[in-house]
Image (cartoon, rainbow, N blue to C red):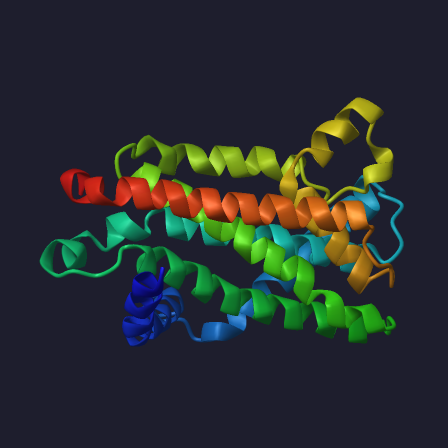
Length: 258
């Protein structure tokens, strides 16, 4: 274990360069640059708020804030896993030339998306202040569901990255999966409108628990129950460890499929 840690520490400068590269490439030739990290969720919130508040009439107090808080969580997961899925394939030329721990490419994507997550969270706070909503003391604890979210996303990213190297169809199918996942996550709608059977299905989605925990802490000044905390922690750790194991088992085969 100490050998792996020493090896990781040795490549930290490279990891920093990879994260910086990802940020620069994403906003290259963009006039507003990193500001889009703030503007994208705000514009999407405005559009969806108008549609679902006026047309579908979801009766949710402070619906724009409810919507944006769900978007912050769900969009991070989708962006993180989508970009990480092609991280090994996109770095094929570098992997073939020199030895680099391949997991660094996945971790760099997760870290760059985490920077965007912090910017999106800043946008959420700005909306809260503009709407003159109270910032509760439980705001300090939102780091907990965010840590669970990053761990869960890292595990899924490791699995997807290792599978996509050999099965490229996953890359094209994943957008269909995330679209379906959006409707199985209470980002847009409140859980109260769901029939009991559908509600049970939605609760099986690990992201649902993280979204609800984040909202309760941020909007409703409510601490999560021990059960929801334990389930979120267990799911995040399990998927993170499983992802690392799958990636470790498959990484030696990458070079044969790149």
